[in-house]
Image (tube, rainbow over all chains, first blue to last red; front, side, top):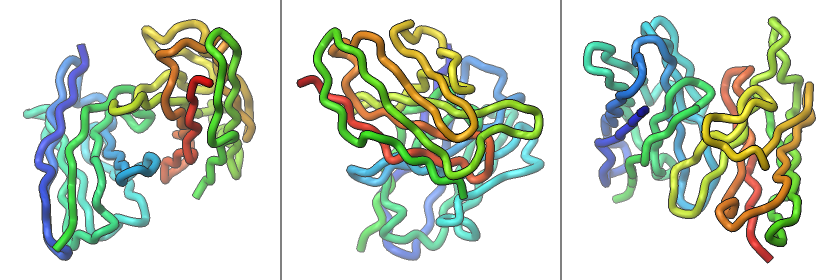
Length: 115
Length: 112
């Protein structure tokens, strides 16, 4: 059974940093792309970033490019999202998802950017 | 970026009746290999999204056969043959052919 569990969400001030983690199990982690998708309060889904199985490429939404970095540790079956220079508009529920076509999702972790 | 446009944005339906949601993309979703990566998701109230359909018309494991996807190029449709109470929620289309990946605005399905 595929299981995805995000963690690391918190309340942070504008300009601050945060690192999200996503622990995955139930599939061969190192053979799949992995993605982050976010959902602002009361809004729709927004794709954030995707990383290749061996970390040789990554893609980002323009809204986070240069501020967020996706990475993974295949030995730990864990995906990360380093978020720097956070803005109020980054406030959202952040989901980790298997693949770039998002076939499985976690429950999400809440990031709130506010002073 | 590929813009995904869903219609309608709100869909009141009667239990047992069919429902249909349209999704149009601003450019073709056919890749150089001839494949089309158009997915449909359902987000029930208070839950994470769940993928229902991938590559236009393939149902994910465990998805009831009352759900079907169709379309090609830039024009796609999700159909529910007979709506059940558990189908209430927001439906999103998403294209996975081009970078960045993009979602439609969502269609809220509710029971009349």
